[in-house]
Image (cartoon, rainbow, N blue to C red; front, side):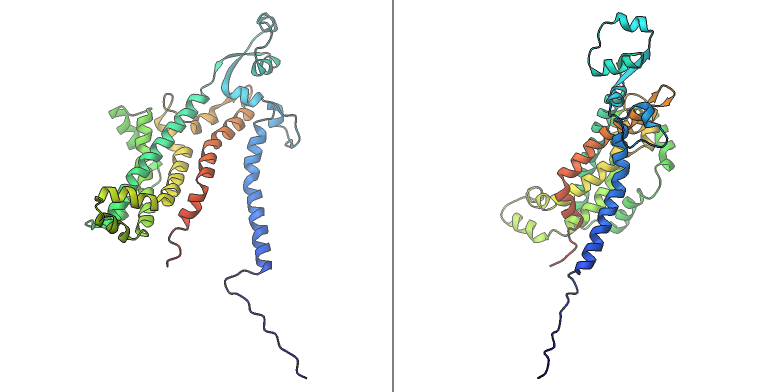
Length: 319
């Protein structure tokens, strides 16, 4: 009696159980490593100044809101007699400040800088995506003379480091009155981001069949109506992905913000490193400010995460 031979078939595409476990372990380890700095910054925002600079670093500590209070207020040291003459503390921050023999002198400049970041980053992202979508549609659907050369020229604007053009831009902005203005920063970030938007969105629009627009125009739509009602909904994933990348650049940009702004239009990135406490850098306030600064970009990315994943893989598999 001959023994039956069983043939085990293995899929070339489907990963094995071992490879899945190894890949899952690597992903978890990578996520932990990347999250440690963020968790440490968050924890620093709830430490006291002595705990924030203690050595060895303290992992277990008594949380305090002193860093957040220092972030949003300015303080001045006073005598015990003057502090007692003020009466009981008004609020948590006032109580924490008086424990350090100080009083609150007024509000800090963090909130106005944070608002500047919101206006400049989201404003430049809107205009960069708007101009990038229109330009990408033109390159994708019309016969533009020297299209390849123009696209390369547009992309080349992203190749040089920002510091290479920082001085000429500073001199130009000073002459035209755009230095230290929100409008100037929005225009600058839009100009930098529009090249990225054109290249990303052209790839997305190329994947949308022209037959959709032709069918819409046969039904009586104009070119603009077909673009608005047919192309834009189909390209929404690409637009969302492009908006996230543009927003990340404008939100975190530091070199231009340091050189071109000083007060009125200064954003949070150049302001946070200047938070000074008694005896040096106020690290709890820096940690609190950095944590709050991360929230808008994190929320925006989470809200568009589905579009981001679909946008990155859009057109990867052709039917």
